[in-house]
Image (cartoon, rainbow, N blue to C red; front, side, top):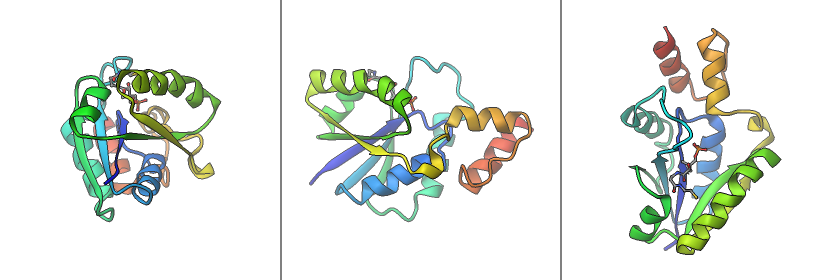
Length: 158
Ligand code: PNS
């Protein structure tokens, strides 16, 4: 049984994330979407509970996916849950530069492997941060996040 974790802040989940979840779920027996603390991102738009609920709503069709959250070191979670793989999306060389040391550190700490999926070109420029900025100033991000997420974001900034 191969269990993979897709870790991230997911504040909120985008269609780019969802595409990675679907593709990861096609290649591993089980996927855990893990909402994880990022020390570089202090205040979130959504609470962990809200992020969880939004992810739950948009991943109902993926039977081998579950959602969890974790406030400690990622490798402590993967070791405790017998997870042997991390799966992340790569949009560009900027992501590569950001992800490479984390993948190497996580492997050094615990042996966990990181698998990168190349982001679908439709979502190459999509990030939670950019989506939040556009919605905050009244812009339309239809198609870049699930409709339920778009509505929840508009509600937050109303
Ligand atoms: O979506 P993000 O915010 O870019 O995801 C980054 C994240 C949450 C995966 C990363 O910050 C992380 O792994 N945080 C958990 C704490 C940890 O293990 N830090 C050491 C990483 S080598």
